[in-house]
Image (cartoon, rainbow, N blue to C red):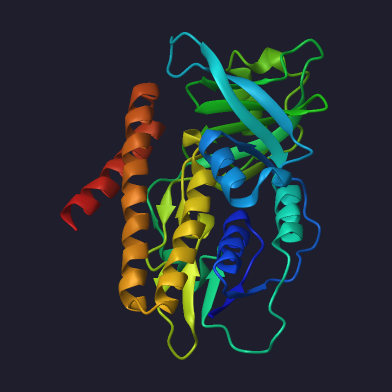
Length: 324
């Protein structure tokens, strides 16, 4: 069967490897990465269902279960609390467990027919990204008497803020702002200070990271095997979604499922070129649907000039799609 190089150790890459092994293909995973810093990850319904069906119950462990979600979306809106099962886990520990469960690997020196990666590669700079918004993230201690099983989302004029209890009294603090951040921790503290959620923490995060968070889609996520073999980009390298939706992990897993299906169908005689075209089309369709959701939500919540630039960028993206 087909030999596939897995050029990375992310959720999507390892899930694709598991699916390919189950279908009888040969898989060569990347070497284990050096121990990385903690990467808090919140898994909600769709992602939990997919991980359970693809990896089994033994995958999850060492995380923190949440039972509810509270949302206040838009200025003056009341907060709404409702049941929502979710799981907060260290993404680095989750992928390490995936590697353990993956089991066998191909040790041959044969050249792979396909490479699966979440690295956007040399075309990454050409990502179809519309907008400049930035996600800020840090951790801080919860107050001792606080609720530790409810995730909370709030809006301020600067952007939205999300608190995710992580267990052991710690909380992941995330904020989305409409542009770059020269001082991530300072700006995250400002958003927190404007929010009604500030009182749930003992103090603001002392450090924070800032990452580009505007939705984007890879322009050429699939290439059929040629002299150098085929290439499929999965996960965030193929399709990055605004974390507000809570569907990013599930969508990354879906790219892995689709990539495995492409390789398997090609091995059974379907045109690899046609399959790669289908793969790219599916990603663009998902991207456009996500942009429409983002536009609807952000139009309802933000009216400042900075956010209008983000809204205009999203409208431009959808207009280009409609006229393409």
